[in-house]
Structures are given as C-alpha cells and as structure tokens.
Image: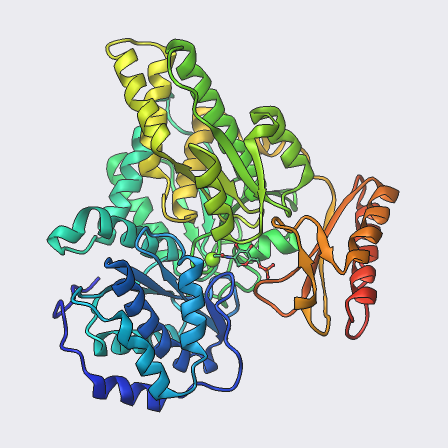
Length: 563
Ligand code: 16G
Ligand code: MG
C-alpha cells in the first residue's frame, strides 16, 4: 500500500475538464446495480472518471473517508466494475446510488461540473482505493484516482486487495486511524484475523489437528496471494497448524472460469485445479470468488462432490452461536436476552430454513430481498447477533450494541469462575474481531468455519449431513422488459402481473413445491427458482414457472425447459 504522496492535492479544474473531455459518456443508460457499475471493461473508462467524482462528493457529503473498489467479482475476465463503500465500510447506501446514477448519466460536461459545486466543503475528501487482478484494473483504477485528485481528494491506494479488505480498511480507517491520518495497513488485517482465529481455537483442547489439509481454490483471482499471506500469519502463531494449500493462482487459468465459488455452487462441479498436482487431497476444500467476498466449501470423494454452500455455512454458524449463547446463559442466568437470528434470501434451500427454524425458532429467521446490501441491512435491523448468508456464499455475522453489553455483563458475572459459561464468553467475545463487520469476507469466513468445525469436533462430511438439500433448479427467461415485473419486498411473491402469482400458486400446489420469479438486478433477464420433493418435480416446476413468465411477461425466443 502506498501512503498518499500529498494528503490534500491542489484541485485542478483543468485536469478535471480534460479527463471528462477525453472520456465522454456513451449513449447507454448506466445503472448502479446490485454490485455497482459492472460492464464489459471496454465501456468503463468514462464511468471510472465519474466514479472518481461521485466518491469525492460522497466523502464531502459524509465528511469522512469512503472507498472505491475496482472489480467484477465472479464475472469473467472481459468484465470489470466499480463499487463505492460508505464510511461505515458497508456498501454505499441508496441515496448515494441515486447520486451515482445521476452523475454517470449526465452527458453535458458543464451541467455535470455545476452539480459538483453544492457539495464542496473545507473537508479534505479521502478515498481508499483497491483493485483486483484483472488486466484492465490498474488503468481503470488510475482514472478514478486522477479524477478524485483533480477535485482535491487525498487517495489511500491499497493496490491489489480483496473487496472485503477494502471495506475493512474503510471501516477501520474511520474508526481508529482518521485522527492520526495514518491509513490502516493490510498487515493489520492479517494479524487481526490470524490472532483471533488462534484465540478462538485456544478455547478448545485438542491433541493436535490431524485432519486433511484445507485446500483453497482462489478462482485465479485476488484471493490467492492474500490467502497465502493469511496462512503465513497463522503459521507464525502456530507452526504446527496443518497446511492450507492455496491453489489456482492468477495467470495459471482463466479468472473464475471452471473454478471459483460461482462455478462450484452453480454448476455443482469441483473446480479445475489449474496449478495443482493430480494427487491433491480433496476431502476438505473451499472455493473463493474472483474478489474473495464469497466462499463455499466442498469435498470430493470417489469422484462425488458434496457442496456446503452459504446456507450450510449459515446453519453451522447459527448452531454454534446458539450453543455458546445457551452455555453462557446457563452459568449467568441474569443476563439480558439477546436477539440471535439469521437472514436468508428466497434462494435459501427450504431444507436449510427448516433446519434453522429448529435451531433458532421461527422468530429467528428473516427472509430479505436478494443482494448483499439488503441482507446486511436486515441483519443489523432485526438482530443483536445477526448471521446472514446468501446461498452463493456471501455472508457474515454482525454484532450489535446489545451483544457488547451482554458480553460486558457476562464478564462481570463470571469473573474468576472456571465453567463452561466462561469458555463460551471467551469464544463469543473474540468473534467480532475474526468476523468482518463491514461485508462478507471469504478469508474471514474460511477461518471462522474451520475453527467451528474443530471446536465442535465435526468432520466436513458430518457438517454436510446436518440436513439434505431439497432438489432445486434455477433458470432464466428473456423478456422484452423485465421492469414490468413487480414483486413483494423480499421477492418471494410476484405482485404484478397479478396472474403470474395466481398461476405459480397452482403449479406449486400440484407438486408440493416452492417457486418464485424475480427480475435480475445484474442482468437483463427474469430469474426463476423452483424446489420440490424430487429432482423431476423440481425441474417440472421450474419449467412451468418459466413458461408462466414467458407467456405473461412478453418472453423472447423460447421458454426454457429444464431437466
Ligand atoms: C450481486 C450481489 C449478490 C446477489 C446477486 C444477485 C453483491 C456484492 N452481490 O452479485 O449479493 O446475490 O447480485 O444477482 O451485492 P441477480 O440480481 O442477477 O440475480
Ligand atoms: Mg464477489
């Protein structure tokens, strides 16, 4: 990471004008979708210039540092994208998105410049920037930097980092480092994770970990180098720690292609190991996505793959948190209750929701709209300890103020005692350091899951067996205009056209299954999901749901058939 060469560069209106003139906006309407602006890399330069402006305005508006990450996550190498992080380290809130869309779509340079004026203030805007390993990322990132500097922003350039590291840097930069203006160092991230993982494992007595090595497929992306650094940090604390073998380095294979979490979860196939020996042990593996904010686990034995997706991770975490919290309260009954719960999306497999109902009770589950920002928000709003995971492997655990109060009271109640409750207290107290509080983080989740499996003495196959997924099918339908479809808040029901839901209800009842349709937030398609007691029925229901959308929502081409 490079320190800002000059904390507050002199604004340069000439440079700003030059950048805008050299990179005029095209005709396409640009949308700040679920995960920022994401397009074929060739059309991104004008967007990057405008994001340099928006990030500066956001920093002025909030009077605090913000972040910009250049990545297209799990998309293929031809794509790139950019997203902005708010000062709390989370995804930029919706008022910022509105501003981003307005600025990106303003074709008239003079009008664009006028729109900047009301935001100007004495506060020196500070922008953390990071990028992934795509070949176009350095040049695209540089456009953001040049533009922001032309407006007088101080840049903290983190170079090649994972998306969650960027969010983490923004969060920690605002909390601890801002008064000193010393930017957070990536080294701080690794030692925080390694030390808290170590502290969590230290609560559990074992005679050494003799399990198979943990193999991490880094999707040929940015997670590769950072997973290795993390492994080194762990080995420095505990030289006997079993190896974490990181495979699929950038350049050894195409980014996200036949590897990475998106491939493993959607195709239900193990990744290609581009740079690993044929005898790689595959009893215990994890796949990251291209910017390392998602993770799924899997194992391959006798050619058979078993997947532990985001749903299964959520179940493991909830089971652990509930057990520890109950152990704590058993020894400290005067503690106030805390709300422990989980947020899932409509894509969560019904079997996982059923499992979670048994662990947490029905009041412990909220279904939110698809997209990280929605589930994150719901977890913070509904729970004091809020787990959220999308089935695709993006998730984390958020700890709210009532949790910290509960820990402080438990500490007072159990001080000096040696009991199960005090072990639970140690475990729970270390979690907010291990678990990324800004966004879902594949590296943090990797260590969290691994520590829980060790503490609970569970093998990956025992974890896998806690429930069996209902057969499900996902597909997409091309329609003339996906915006004609309106859904309810959490996208489990279609409100308009009304007939769609009426017909879906009949189709679901016929096979005792569940199905929903929703317009995608990232692609020009309508997504279809179905699950049912058997594979045949799930395919039949998905086919019927796609046919309903195709017929009632002006389908293009042919309705897809599944199975
Ligand atoms: C984005 C979202 C992801 C969501 C997916 C849905 C982030 C960082 N990622 O990848 O959470 O599951 O979009 O895509 O917000 P869809 O709307 O095309 O189905
Ligand atoms: Mg990602």
